[in-house]
Image (cartoon, rainbow, N blue to C red; front, side, top):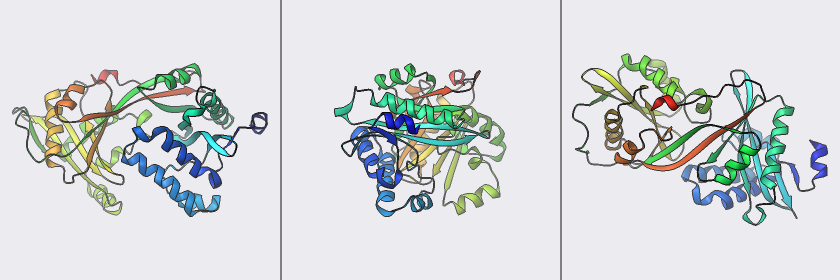
Length: 333
């Protein structure tokens, strides 16, 4: 890797002691129009770390799981960062996998192969460390980036859509009257857990603010929520006494409240609609509600319930191990 960067005077490893402000400037310039408030807070966090720390030791002590870039590559021209790529390691099933993120090139420097060379350097970095899989996400509307990653051997694994909604103060009379919404019961947990793990499988859940055991009934869960300054409200949809779905609204850090949906393989959209509309009227806060769901599943149901499509991300990976098995959420329809 050192020899490679010597051959290319513009490409070098990220140095978090001096590059964080430049990385933040790049993210701002390339993604500002598509960032939500959580994304802007992420950029502000990078700047805060850059301004408050003068040493790598100091930076490491204060990251606290914020995702501030610590590994990656930059492309530097005349002392200015014009390209960036962040590498985020994560441990899954006792094996190291890596997420390639924040791939950005200033507009004036695009179409010069910078993003390709940054990504190739990241893949070599990952392979040199015995990484099993390299992951990345690309917006559905960014065909050029999708084609670039496909040409480098990445394969599409899943498409996930994030919807946003604002709480409302009135009840929607169009909710199906055969569906009743109740508080989640402890007896609902086995079905809820199985459905949650299906809608949010491990292959994508690792990069979401999602922990399935946060929703388990019991005193220890409540104690954990208390110490983490977290609140969770859960509702169930039923027809007669048959469970049709569970919705969990989670209040935590960030600028949105996360909604997690547990629905069975054979999805009943009137039950989902009832849950979605109920949550908008019963949400204890006035913050934006954010929900991540498989793309293309029940889209009209979300829209009818007042949830707007915020972004659709394509999850792609490149396996360094033969026979890696892809997962799919196609059976959820």
